[in-house]
Structures are given as structure tokens and as C-alpha cells.
Amino acid sequence: MKIAKKNRHTLTMSKRIFAVMLAFVALVLALLWIFQVLFLGDIYENIRIGELKRAARQLEGSLDGSNVEQVMYDISSKLDVCISVYEISGNVGKLELRSHIDADCLIHNIVYDSLLKRLYSGASQQKYYIERVAPSEDAQHSFPETVIMSCVAEGDNKTRMILINAEIAPVDATRNTLIAQLGWISVILVVVAILLTYIISRRLAGPIVEMNKEAAKLSRGDYNVSFNGGGSRETEELADTLNYAAAELSKIDKLQRELIANISHDLRTPLTMISGFSEVIRDIPGEATPENMQIIIDETNRLASLVNDMLDLSRMTSGNKALNIERFDMRELVRETLTRYTKLKERDGYSFTVDSDREFFVNADKNRILQVLYNLINNAVNYCGDDKTVMIRQFETADGAVRTEIIDHGAGIAESELPMIWDRYYRANDFHRRAAIGTGLGLSIVKSILELHGARYGVISKEGVGSTFYFELPLAQIDAE
Ligand code: ADP
Image 1 (spheres, rainbow, N blue to C red):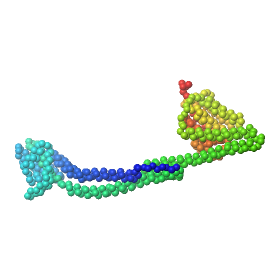
Image 2 (cartoon, rainbow, N blue to C red):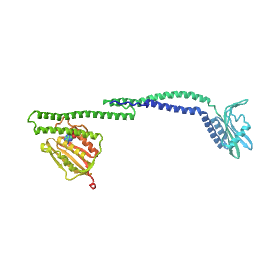
Image 3 (cartoon, rainbow, N blue to C red):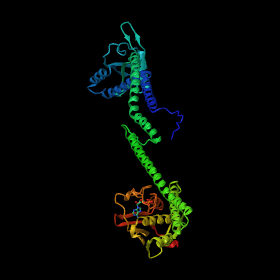
Image 4 (cartoon, helix red, strand yellow):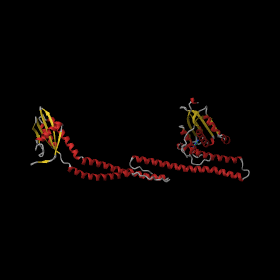
């Protein structure tokens, strides 16, 4: 069988993995770019101002304590800032404490009154007032860009103003370094993405590509395939499933070949007999005896039953599974089935005994259950050997079902064969039994019908003692009668 390849527009697995990797790399780079380059200045300033606020709060709490100068010194050296504390009385501010660690700090070098006033009025309006001062120069100093935070603190009947002066280092140099680094990081990330794609696709896509090749062989009818799942659990499970499917397909293929061989043999034998005897009757006067005619009739019947078996099975497997449920008596059904065997009784000396002491009404598909009975009785007749006795027993089980047993005292079935006899096309003893016409389909038909009914069924058999085939159907409720 040739598989038509669809004109697919989907990406291969490796390309898809690579696309996902590249998208991931692009996202990482974009985030780095945004945070490290675009907003670097803002982020740095926000962090610095946050530090100043915390320092101001700490200082506020220590202003009236004895170790205020130590606290101021600690904060100054830790945050690299200069601090002044003014005592405010009326309109006048007097420098009370200072911590000066940076020669270029603005608040300790030039303090214009106007700046002090602005800082004080700002701090009176909002708790932590921030003033940014652009770089500037005077005769002795050059002042970088700085930030001054002012905050008014009340305590011990004094009003004070805390000033914290911090340099805002320019981030341009840092930004340029980062841009250069990001260039390298981008190259490295893309190379890593390519490497990872290669490794992942080898591990994931590799086994799938291999399995695909094997599956293509399988689809061409080559059952000598072996699927290997590689490293991951999903692909290993897929490989196990495909190996199982391949083994089953190969088994079915083998059984089907055997069936064709069996059927051709079974068809040829009666046909040879029919044509042989017909020629004898046509060519030799006096050979048109009832016995010869009977042989032709028997062989025709064999052919008919073979064809019926095959039709039954194909009907069962082609999905026609609807049951035609009706209410009927199992004891009566056994009687009906046995009427087909009257001739066998009279002519060949077979005897049939029925052990059933009452009616057993069930709700089931009558025609199909008749088929079950017919197949089981046929097998009993075929395999009962010289004993020529078939017994049918019916009784009620403890859980309210009627159990029908078909018992023979023939050769029985070897224990090793018992599980296989229900398989389609299976025939125990490979030699071809002329007496037992069968295709190996009978029990598989029985099994399909009983399983459709949800019935319990089985066989008890011992070699040299005989076989008991049985099935159980639930008894119909009394009130339904
Ligand atoms: P067949 O058409 O060959 O009888 P079945 O499916 O009816 O096919 O049975 C499968 C195999 O089970 C038979 O070939 C036979 O070996 C074994 N078998 C079935 N019924 C009996 C029985 N009553 N006694 C011994 N062997 C049996």
C-alpha cells in the first residue's frame, strides 16, 4: 500500500524547537535591554532615593540620642553621602551637626540662603523633599549632578531640618559598557540556542524520524521492523506500542495465509469428491446408486457449511453487532437444534442425551444462540471419537443464570492448547481431519456471540477424558412473562 504524502506546511520538529529557542533568546535580550539600558538611569535614581529616605528615617529616630554623631557617620560612610542637621528657630536655621565625607559635596561648600529656604519649605510641604541640582562650578570647586533630600524633624522642643546630599553618578559610561556586553551576550545566546536545538532535536526528533522510516516499511507490508524509542519515556512508549502492533499484524497476516491454505484445501476436497462421483455416475451405467448420490449430497453440505462459517465470521467482524433480543426457552432451543442431527443419529449411530428438567426462559438473540449451540454440538460430534455420544445438560446457577453444557467423551484438548482454541483460525492438531470438517472459525464465532451477550463461557477438558464446553445466560425475570 502506498501512503499519499500530504502537502504539509507545518515545520519540522528541529525548526520548531529552533523557533521557540530564538523567541526565548529574543525575550531575554529584550528584557535585558529594557532594564539594563533604557531604564538604567531611572532605576538607579529610584534605588538611591529609596536609600536616602531610609537613612533620613533612621537619623530622625536618633537625633535626640547621645550617639547621633556616630549614626550620622555610619550612614555617611555607608551610603557615600554628606549630612547636615540645622536647628530651626523662627526664620533662622543654624547648623547643629554635620557629617562631611565628600570634598565636593554641595551642602557643605556653598549654601545659599535661597537654597536652604527652598529645601525647608519643600520639606514642610512633603515629608521627604527631593531637589536635583545640576552640575556647577565655582572658583575652588566643580560640583557634579547631585540630589539633596530635606526632611523636617520635630523633637525635644526643637525643630530641625535634616539635609542629605548624595551624588548621582552619571550612568552613561555604565550604559555603554552594558551595550557592549549585551552585544556579546546576544551572540553567545544565539550560539547556545543553536547548540541546544541540535542536542534536543537529536534526542527527540531523531528517534521519531527513525520510527517513521520503520513505520513506512511496515505500511508496505514488511513486518520485519523494529522500533527504537531513543531516550525519552513518550517515544519509548510509542516504540513499544508500534512494536506490539507490528507483531500483531504479522501474526494476523500469518494466520490469514494459513486460513487461505486451509480453506482452499477444505474446498478442494469436497469439490474433487463431487466431480469424481458425478463423472462415475455419468460414465458407468448402474453407478447412480442412492449411496453414491448421498456422498455427493454430503459433500455439498460440507461446502455449504464452510461457506456459512465464513459468512458468519465476516458478518461478526464487519461491525454488525446489533443483537435481536427476544424471549425464548433454552430447553426448547436445544431440542430444535438436535432435530438437525436426526439423520446422523439414524445413519451413523450417534446418540444425543438431554438433561434438562424444566423450561429456562432467557432474553437473548435466539438465532445467534442457536448458532452457538450448533457450533458446540458440531464440535462435540466431530471430536467425540468412537464414543459417539454427546450430552447436553442444563441447570440454574446460584446467581440466577441458565448454564448449558455440551459434553463429549472424546480425545479432549491438551492444556497448553486450551487458551488458543477460541482464537480465530486456530485448529489444534495440525493434521487435517477429514471427519472433522472445520475451518477453525467455529469457536471464534461462539466467542464473539457470547461476548456480545456479556455471557460467561468456557471449557473444561482433559486429554483422553473428553471436553465440556459451557455458557451461561441470565434467566429472564418472572414478572416479564
Ligand atoms: P474447527 O472448525 O477446527 O473445529 P473450532 O474453532 O470450532 O474450529 O475449534 C477450534 C479447535 O478446538 C479445533 O480445531 C479442535 O482442535 C478444538 N476443539 C473444539 N471443540 C473440541 C471438542 N469438543 N473436543 C476436542 N477438541 C475440540
